[in-house]
Length: 225
Image 1 (cartoon, rainbow, N blue to C red):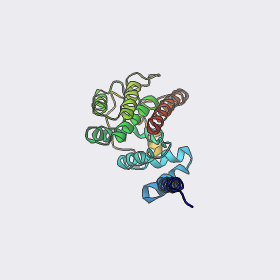
Image 2 (image 1 turned 180 degrees about the horizontal axis):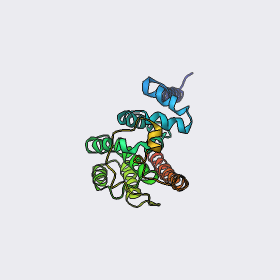
Image 3 (image 1 turned 135 degrees about the horizontal axis):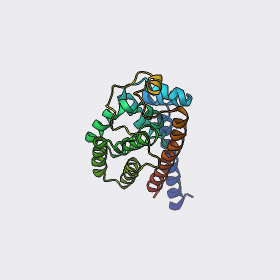
Image 4 (image 1 turned 90 degrees about the vertical axis):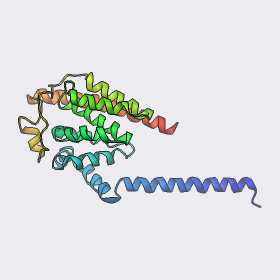
């Protein structure tokens, strides 16, 4: 004889199984459904250098959209590591999007991208235009986890652990067509002296990675609360 308690248990089991199935389907889509998912899957199968080369060949709009898409993975893919070298082409677009974007997650992700640029490529401390727009966008955030992420990004933008050459005197330029352009053209990067560049970039990436990891753990704890 089936008791009411057994029925309730069965209902809960079926609901939980359906939830797991839905999560598995969603996870599968995030790793391959649709053109963006397929492209992300292909990019993540590449070496680090190949990923940078692939992003450097894309228009800024495409780079940014794939970055946003990758941030929906768990854990986020943090593709801004590969976008940062083409910061000169991305900067005008990010400034424009920050003034008009209503999606708070995307705003926080763009601020994290600016943070990555500032700590691994060229310091944005003296770029008042960038800081004003970034601060204004951060001030409009209402969701606590994104407010916290934005606050940390702004802090690292204005108080970097290691000061890099400033980007204040460099004009915004059209996007670079190849990864080699972004690496070797003298106007493309602020950084100079290969050994010094490698040392600064490695330590800066570690700082940025640590900050990103902290924010991800905070996001996860808020989501599971």
